[in-house]
Amino acid sequence: MAVIDHHTVVVGSTGDQHTFVLLNRPVPAAHRILTEQGLTFRCGPGRPVYLLPPEAAGAEAHRAVATAVHRLLDHTTDFIDLSATARIAHHPPASLAAPAARFDLAHPRARTTTTGPLADALLQRQGFRPADGGYLLPGHLPEPARIAAVVLADFALDRAGATSLISLGLPTPADIPPTPTPGRHTNHRPPRHATPHRTTSPRPAP
Image: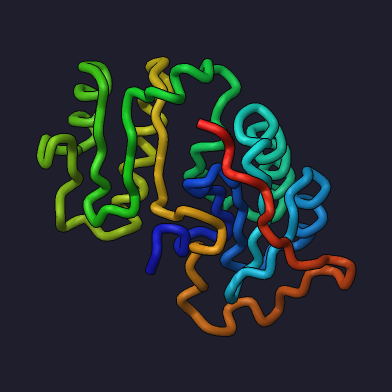
């Protein structure tokens, strides 16, 4: 399974700065809630995916995702936010360009690099171990526990006033993997007016 397979609603982002929300199980009213916040439906392989373009990264993505998730909570509490593009609100852009910690969830042990002693101390408190020029989680952890450790460390850094970013190892929306369970969404049907999204937004300038 992939790290995006474990929760009903997953918020994430790609390397080219798209923000996405995907549904691993049908959620009542999700299509309406997400499209009302400007996300565009895309026919994903086996599961619906909703996208915001790269130019929305930052405050706009933060607002749209926060509003949508708040409304989705009326239908499910099984969600997780692993995005880098929907962060922002209280962190200045410069701090996001050079975060205190970068988590790589595509790595089998969530390899993490840091830029200062605050992040070093917080990561070690959350069970990360110095290794490989950064930090690694113990190899015996199952994937759900690894994801939980990253989310807790990310939250601890945020509470301490430090920025952190999570990478899912997905360069573009086309790289979002299919659901591991064929037919899992046989009951999910977007309205007839929903059309597939084709990503045409250019990569943002560095």
